[in-house]
Image 1: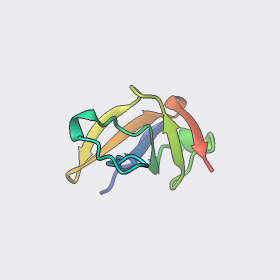
Image 2 (image 1 turned 180 degrees about the vertical axis):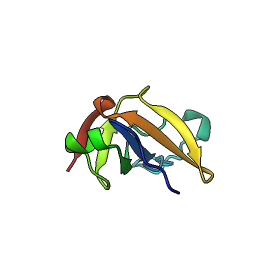
Image 3 (image 1 turned 120 degrees about the horizontal axis):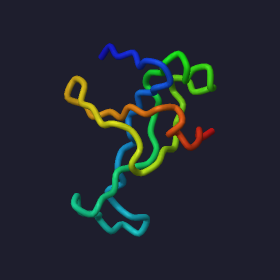
Image 4 (image 1 turned 90 degrees about the vertical axis):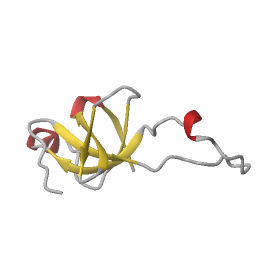
Length: 88
């Protein structure tokens, strides 16, 4: 995949969805919610200036970003201001 976000945009790969609870109950596909955190795969020049870098794990809002498919994988493009924080 060769994708370079423009301006303050960031390319995110969502973390894997949890399929079981801590007590071992299996969650069916129709009851799962998409994770609200993911790994940064590419960063636009303006987002880089804001301290977001490739490899960071970030948290974002439930309805943030635009979903795209590249090489049969789903990704999310966010503006840097839609990122709520960086997990350390």
